[in-house]
Length: 395
Image (cartoon, rainbow, N blue to C red; front, side, top):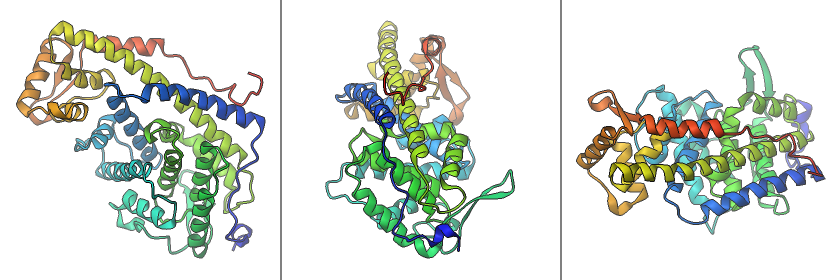
């Protein structure tokens, strides 16, 4: 047994004492979040499609960290409740659908008046995340030791605490989360994430579970809806730095006396960049919607066709089924038939707004020249998100 494992099971990684720098960063993130609240506080027709894309990006990002890569279209299809087209490996698609179900549950738990954190919840979420793979022992604590291996280097980079410690450590973590009312939500979520991934309570799926727990903590704190406050997309885009900071914090084994300051700062950077990215995406979406309304009016198309044109403008493939789902989600009273959808899509092609690809069951539609021009304008005007000032107190 290592020295780290000899530490009392009542001990977890403790939140660091927040300096003026961390408090300044939190204030800057809250400023961005307040701007986001302005956009999401009332129904807007373009908000639903944006929310769908953000949810898809979070799920896609968190699974990609574990090597389960899927296309943007498959991730969006899963969020929309449609069947992914199966272009990616079967195991990746199963992991996508499983995590989507877990996140749907998180959305429900975010508004549950009778909610509380407990180990049974963690096991239930793990079952949802890994149910497609019985080798992961879905919903069960790991029965023995566990190691994280760097296959490229051929070495073990982390060893979790002894299996006998897991139940009490997780119980301790649940109690700690319930008792962190004095902590900013982002710090509370970061510490929940860190402790669960370091406890490594399951045979597989520990990283996804830790990220899922962090998102749940943020959702329960009422920060914003999970799709607007999750940093899972950011972590998926920055996998190596994410692994590096966890390795530096854990130092190879269960060492809860280690300082978590750098980890918390890393998460604050992630929150700032993600919030700025979401705000930019929302503003671009609002502007895009207005331009698409003008295109639809000029071509004398039904207003509902904007749903398909919006997705295509942001690089997604449009299918008859996905178009019908988008219309149903936006306006439940305007559900359209397969024949009506086919007619609408043909009219969009005839207007030059969409281009048809493939034949029969494999057919889909992509952005036409006017939509590509709209997308290019946004990309050309997009500024890089800077965060070097994030922890500066005097700026």
